[in-house]
Image 1: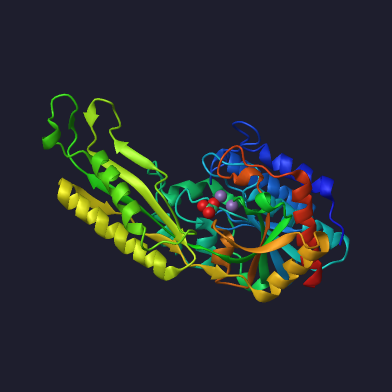
Image 2 (image 1 turned 180 degrees about the horizontal axis):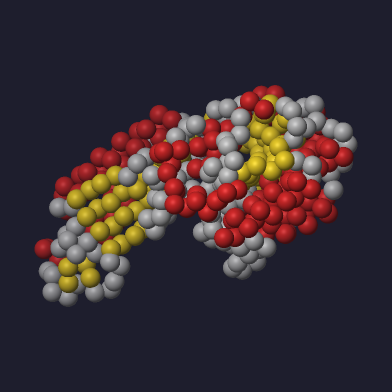
Length: 398
Ligand code: GLV
Ligand code: MN
Ligand code: MN
């Protein structure tokens, strides 16, 4: 099977035009935005031209279906609020190119997918989580984004494009190509990473409620300042995690909403995201206990109300041995001795799809290890090398 590197790169650059923003090759294409829907309509057209049957499901996951039983390749085409041009997009366009090349070479039937809301505007990998049954649609519909818009309202943007959910039984497995989004391959100079497992994640919103008041007249000892509670919470969990975490464990407070967020007002409310990731479910659970206990102690000590939002989570998953072996053989064929096996610290749709069928993942290097930022990039020669690894692997799975 012979992939067309120019056609692949041209499609990748075309997809970036939907929501192109910021410096370098930045993209703003969050789930259900105008740019996201327009990109999906363009992708559906490219799928049709490739001889696939495009079909949207009720949450906006877009499949390009081959006839009969097929291997599913893909990723997602929504972006972070500030994202790069490759996160997700690479796996979708590489899938499209391999599907085209397979048809041209009378190769194995390949279907393509672009999952929706992988980037978690509403949750964690929402589109594939609903498709895989880990998040029931009624539960997803009740989730809200940081502006209070519900998933149910946002997904109405799919309109009459929506068909039924696709029966997963038509697929023999799922392979997702993605940028690494970390510094390992860039640092070692290796061309590819074959993923061994994907870490688990927990994510929830926490709110401290104090008393909004005048910032000039309220003495310090009488304040119930929600920001001070958040600051104390952050310092306390950093100290308490020390005995529990490994160097691979990560945790992030990435979004903070202070109410009313004005210089002369003691903040009455602090709502923030608390996210933590690790390869070990027990450790994730121990961290959850620390988070909940610490928030309760601080709320008590500072006279705060406290509420926890729904906790979203995905368990760590191992990649399928057969699919992984095909990627390893593909990597060795394209970049002999210049690739590695590695875990994924980023979340991917493959985690959800693993509930339905065997899955595997392939990484290409990320320059400077930067992602979820406009500066995200990869050398085009490395993108093409990754595409060739994927095609080699697929050829071995027929
Ligand atoms: C996916 O984008 C993640 O946050 O790992
Ligand atoms: Mn991604
Ligand atoms: Mn991402």
